[in-house]
Each structure stands twice: as C-alpha cells, then as structure tokens.
Length: 218
Image 1 (spheres, rainbow, N blue to C red):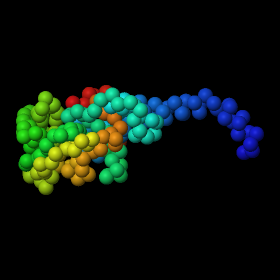
Image 2 (image 1 turned 60 degrees about the horizontal axis):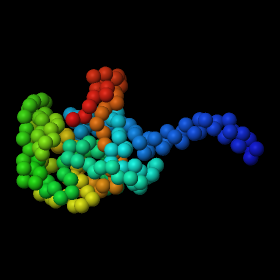
Image 3 (image 1 turned 180 degrees about the vertical axis):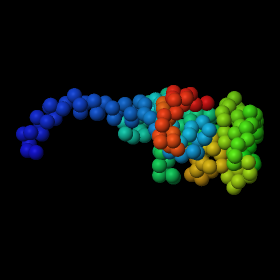
Image 4 (image 1 turned 45 degrees about the horizontal axis):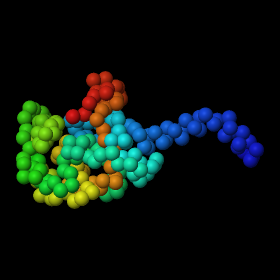
C-alpha cells in the first residue's frame, strides 16, 4: 500500500473508524460486559454468565487506563466489583465484604465484620455443597459453602487499610480472593456489576439460559 492510497482508505472508512474509536472509549470508560469463566461467584454468578459492568459507578477514567478524572462514589459492602488484579495478574469479579477501616474475619465459614457475625437462613443442602442466604450489616445475598470445614473457612482477623477493600467470592470454599491475593487497591477497581446480560450453558452445547437474561445480582 503506497502513501497515496492510505489517506484514501482512511477517508473511505472514516465512519467505521470513528465508530471503532467511540466503541473503545465507551467500553473502557462507560460500560462493558465481562464473561465469567469460573464458579468462584456461585450461586450469584455461574460459568457462562456475561455480566454488565457499570464503569461510571465509582469513577470517570481516562479511556484504557485506571486514571480517574472524576470520582463519584466508593465501593460499599455487598457491591460486586470488577477489578484488574496486579496480584493475580488477571481481571477478577468478587464481592466487597470489607471497606477501609473494617475488621474482617472468617470463623468456620461464618463471616464476621467489626465483631458482628453474619446470620444465615434459607439453607439448602445439595451434593457437596450448602447454599444459604447471608445477612450482615444490611446486606443479604446467597453464598455457597462446603459441607465440611476447609482450609479457607478460617481467616484473620485483618483490618482493611485506607484505599483498599476486602473482597470474597460468594463460593466461599472455591475462590482465590482477598484471602489469597490480599486487599484490593481502590485504583484497581474498574466498575460494579448489578445485572447479568446473558448466559450460555457451557455444559449443554452453549445453549442460552434464558431465565438468566437480564437477571439482577443481589
């Protein structure tokens, strides 16, 4: 391709190129969707879910960076956050259970924050799993627990430092979360998810799970 044809090519495809640039800006700074490949957030999020990420929930960032131009809010307990973890070297989806200043502990899989232990009800037993609704500090959501005490069932206590958060997977015994990677720095958090956009069943020929389309995350 010579120098004369390149400007012509750019001119002929100007509309498409502008669309691509706007799409990149939109997905990096306003909203995006993420595929969840693991079960660390079961039962709230299952393998094959595609979640909507609100990138304006906390900040307006420079596109393709974590440089904040404006801060709107900070993550709260119960928020499902998406963050680019330097410790894990990948993007993760976890739930905030501890904000700066909180003292967090797990005792036999019971979450304790600031000396108050979570309460559990709606308990359902399944093969190799126990499902329950966890209630703590006004936040309620479903969790998956092992019927047996595992190595990850006891942790802490630790105090969350300023500018950091303590995040856990809802699948408490199968999640590499703050018990493994440490506290989540505020500037690694890229957004919050409150909805599943769509879901494909990996175990059934990738067929759509229509009942999970646009499902709200608790």
